[in-house]
Length: 148
Picture 1 (cartoon, rainbow, N blue to C red):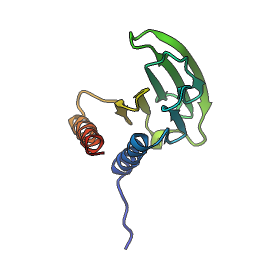
Picture 2: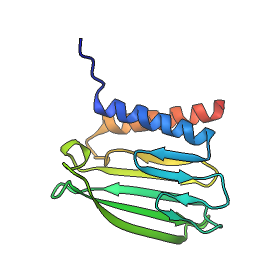
Picture 3: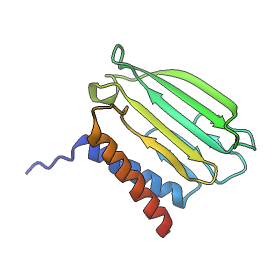
């Protein structure tokens, strides 16, 4: 018997595990993204944010024209939504990214460890199922954090 977990559910499970780790630890890893929140140096993946950083946003995107090229952005924001520091670079992914589809991955984390936005596929207006899954995941994460 060959049991396979659908990729979307597998991704959701991995993200949930990562968010639970964030609530319990100082270092948070999702795929190859690392965020360190509970120290004086707020590490936002590839950059170290200034001390007055309130939140960090990491995005990874690819286009349908060239799935092997992924744009990675790290941005540190103040409480007033001012950009304090940012970086952008491009990575080459062997064999393409996202299982043959364009990817849009966004991770938005406050210095306190609170996850504000977490998506793994670019939302589409016609994709209500994906939006429902995303909303359910965010709700479950909030419930888990409240129970800790």
